[in-house]
Structures are given as C-alpha cells and as structure tokens.
Image (tube, rainbow over all chains, first blue to last red):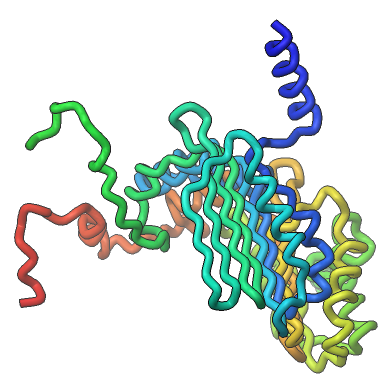
Length: 187
Length: 193
C-alpha cells in the first residue's frame, strides 16, 4: 500500500512539474553558448507539433496521413549541437551529468561506443512504456563537439521504416520482419 | 462631372495611401513590436542599410487580398553592410532576441556561429492563425521575415491549390502519381543490366 502511495506522490510530482520522464534537462549546457564556435538549438514541441498535426491530418494524401499518425503522440524533439574551436573547451562533467540522467529508471541502453580517437563517446538510450517506445536520447561527445538529441513521445518504428526513403526522410533499412510473426503471412 | 471625377480620384488616392502603408507605419501596431524591435536593433546597432525591395507594398497588398496558401500577411526587411564585431555579435543578438520575443513566442531553432552567421525562428499562435518570424544574419547581410498564416487554409491549399479560383494543380502530371506506388517487387531488377 505504501508503494502505491509513493507511486501516486511521484506521479503527482511529475504531473505538477509538467515534466515527462523522457525529457532530458540541458540546463547544465547553457553556459556553452558563449564558449562554442557554432551552436545549434532545435526545440520542436507543443505549438509547432500541434500545428504540424493539424495540417498533416487535414491534407488528403496517404503519406501526409502516415506522417500525422507518426507524430500524433510526439511531445517534443530537442536537439543541441556545440562545436568548439579547441579541445577541452567544455567541462566533461556537464555532459556526464546528462548521461547520469539516463540512469533514471525507464531508460534502457541501446548502444554505447567509446573510442580513444577524439575521446569519442556515443550513447543511445530508449525508454519504453509497455511495448511502445516513449523516448529516445542520443548523447555524443568528442573533444571538440557535443551533440544531444531527445525525442519524447511514442515512436512507431514500423511506421518510420515505412515512411523512410520518402518525404525527405532518410532510408532506414531495418528488417521489421525479424520479429516472430504468426503464420498468417503468405510464405 | 469633372468635380465628381476629381472626388473619385481623391478617394482612390486616400484608399491607396491607407492600403499600401509602408512597413515603417506598422511600427505602432501591437503585435508588430517584436519585428520592429529586431529591425531597429539591426539598423541602429550595426548601422545596417535597408535594401529597397521594388513593389513590396504591392506584393503585401496582393497577399492581404488573395491570401495564397493561407498566408494572410507578410513582411520582409533586408539589410546589407552590417558593421559588427564577431566577438560580440552572438551575445548582442541573443540579448536582442530575448528582449524582443516575449514568452508567448516559441523558439523553434537557433543556429549561431562565430563566423557571423545567425538564424532564429520563432512561432506564435494568434487565435486561429500562426505567426512565424525568421531572423538571419549572414556576415554583412541580414533579413527579418514575418508571416501570418492560417494552418487550416494552408491544408486546404495543399489539398486543392487554387488562387482566385484558378487551380494550380498540374493536371498533365496526373498519371505520374502512379509512380509513387510501390513497384512490382516480384519483377527482377534488370534496369541496370
């Protein structure tokens, strides 16, 4: 019973803060704006996603309908890229703090690359709610650059694969048939 | 008869004077403030020279009347000969953006480079319409663009592109839509042979 109360309190706290568990906080990197040579910041959320949903849902086109379906549950896409002039111009601990956020319950490590060349570190994490992917986080750091991508909301991989190669979406070669399927397929 | 003609001419002039009001006259309009603040920042801070766009007033008036693709109004101001320091441009522009765009505006993207390139896009919902403002600085040149459009009308336009009742659909290309359909995968790929 205590667990239920604690869960309810935790849920209420998250709801009150209006924060999604899949949302990463990039606040620690705000100071890099002035240090970096190039900065890219993309925030596609709320209003813009609603707008895209409203337009794509109304367009009488099969691809547009699929895009509308693909983005229907999305809550946000956030990208940060920082390129530096020289090596070690940023504090590695700031990026590690973001990696630490991915140790929170719910996140699962999908890929992890460490290379001594340019001190490259690549981490790809996913969050699942039941069988549905509800978040993706990519953290890439090198000696002269940092790149972060955070996608929040259900992501339909099958639909993305179907849309890939069209509408300027890069071709994704994933064998979606690799999953065990019932024997209803024409084989 | 001549007096009547003169009166008509005067009315026409008055109508034109109000309809084709130059962008500067919009500075006092509420909602135009962020646009004007950025334009003023570029003009005063970097002593930028405004580029004259011929027949701009006519284009703006035409858009206001025709509303193509749901675009209800737009405004463009181009500058050249910007004089800024690469070291301070970044901070100055960020500060100007923060000052100009209130919390009702959502920042869609910022791209900044120390080489003197900057691009900002902001979006705001205004009732059933959406306002978009794009600011770019590329070395010595800058552009401030603002447009107000209706997403519903944009979707209608995509479904049935029409201006003044004239369809813009390329009917000759109708059979080409079949190309988008997946090809017969059972057929062996012999095209490269």
